[in-house]
Image: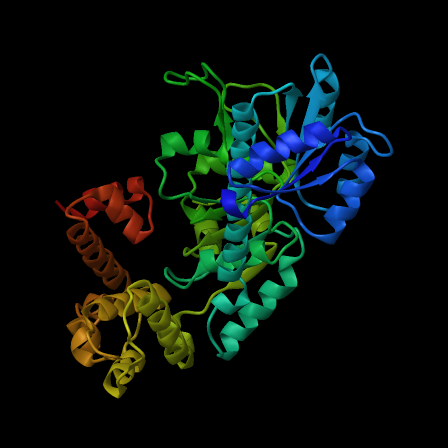
Length: 454
């Protein structure tokens, strides 16, 4: 980076300008000089510089005034102040005003170079962060939600209308329909897009840890609390907190969540002092929460507080006309990631995709295409790269109903089949299996015992 770094040296003493420039040029930096703040400001208006090394005491416009002028005119550059020995108070004041660092005259060449290199690392991280935010924003703009069906266009319209407000949104739909993608689209198209987006899967964290993860705790609150810890509510302050699978939230925590949403205040475990938070709430569930309320498993007041604005995502079965678009979107993405030259599917594959029921929804389609890309060698994905279960049109949902007409029994059979499949996929790892099934570990353990699954 050194060979590309431009530095403006500003000092009213010519010997200082010469000495600093000489040290920096010797170390591969490109330098220009100015004898006062006014000339420096004019130079910075003409062309950008990565860094400005500026004396504090100068005629016409001193270093502090230059710093304020740059900020007022929104000229972005990293300013490092130079101060005479014994005048460090002014340099510290400059840092409070926005300068990055200061060096004290007289200084050693190594000290100057080290200060610049530290500033370079900071600048590199800053630029990477800006680039990452732009990439994230592009990944989660509306173009990432692929489809032209009437139902998905209605969803996009709802996202556009609600994104700019602080309204709490409840996103519902079957597993694999893209609820988190919608949540991120809402956040990254809101005025909070440059603020944190914090996601928590309420079913993936053990019940005894979930409260401390959400609200944090103070030192000594319980055995093992050796230091205070900030919770996810605080991490999301000024941004968005996404409560995924909120239907899995334990009943005793639902009242605490309700209080936090209504009052925008939280209490760390073991603390009596409240903490104010500015958070937008988005929640998602694959459960029918109104039915959970009737069964007494979910608080009605929390349900109504979350369900201010509901976005219901259609299953892939309900928008089959989007399958070709989605398939080619995933194919292009996976071909790039896997460094393949696959351009399309043959006609048989698309016929298979359109005939299959996709009970795993968009996630299942995405996984099938990634697998097909790995197996394919040519420019076209052929039918032999598609799993037999997809080609035959079979899904676990079909085999679950073969026992008769009982919906209750069919649901039990389906759950047993999916649990066994998840355990096989994870080599018996119950935590990972619960994540695949998108239920909590405690819910999985309960079902294993209930169904007698070893």
